[in-house]
Image 1: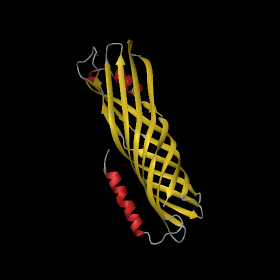
Image 2: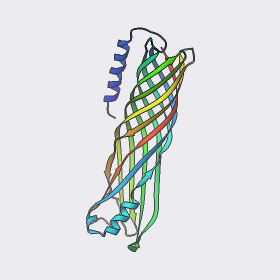
Image 3: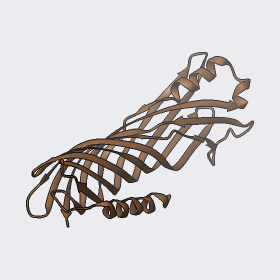
Image 4: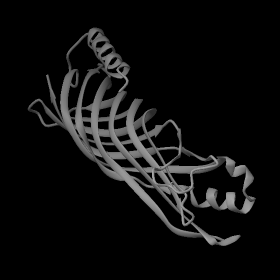
Length: 253
């Protein structure tokens, strides 16, 4: 995990507290936990290379069409957050928050057996998976407070640890696997509402949308494959976006 995000978070939060000139309303530090659900979208495209150039266009098109597609990972997201807010005299609130989330957002697909139309005796099977493991987030937020009610928007930077796989097998003994573990940078924005329960505790509902950098990985022959030469190669290009709805509790001091 890249260590820049927690260090930058600490610098921004300390800077925010240093500029606060008065303690009114929502001004102060907070720490708490959150729990929610995430839904994502991950498009992937398989590109045949190397020795595939010697094969027919129809066969290459079959690999591209069936080795490409879309997954919709879903699952839980939960973790901790820590931040600082400053309320101005006109009711506007400016803050910064860092959070860490454990993610269990994943999906997989299996194409089943696909017959190559131009070579009916030849069949392939394709598989893919995507899994999000964890997330660091550093976001600023701007809101408007009215008594115990705070409405806000947020935006910032995220890092997500994700794993992806791609498989390709045939009835001709062709057996390939591609796998990668990535730390992906991205951006996040959100909207939310927070309520002050009057005892230093607040409860928050929030929606966030996250867009991550694209990534690429190659397949390799799997031990036991009867077809290992000449060198065929498949490259998978994949993107990953996801949204979360979560509830959070904060203790303010």
